[in-house]
Amino acid sequence: DMVSKLQRERGRARQSEMALAEVKRELIKLNQEREEEKLFLTSKIRSEMEADKKEAIMDAKKEIQTEKSRLEKTIGAQFQKEIETLKTMLSKSTAELTEMHNKDLADKLAAQKAHYESILNTESEMARQKMEALEMQLFEAEQVVSKKDSD
Image (cartoon, rainbow, N blue to C red; front, side, top):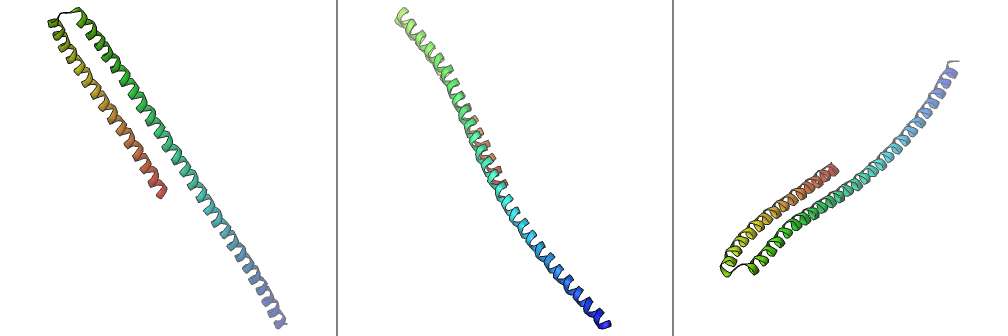
């Protein structure tokens, strides 16, 4: 009677061990599937981040180019008009005035032209500095994105 109980217990123990081994195999399989899914999702997220980073960089470049073009047009048109006005004034004055008046007026117009060219140079320098600042911001943004990617 004891032997038969012992044999039944051994049989149950073997069945339990087999069931435990099956559960372990299933857990290992589930763990492997989870790791594969984790790798897939990580890869997908990295791809999306890279695409977002490229899009952000392109948007920033477009914005900088638009701002640069706008500044160049604004500054160029504004001061070109003033220079043309000064040239017209000089032309009219030289036809109407005597040689003495012509020299005096030419000196004044040259001073005004120099003044406006100085302003144009100052505005151009400010625009260049603004462009450099925008390019630096873009560079820093690219560095931040790049650092985040590497993390």
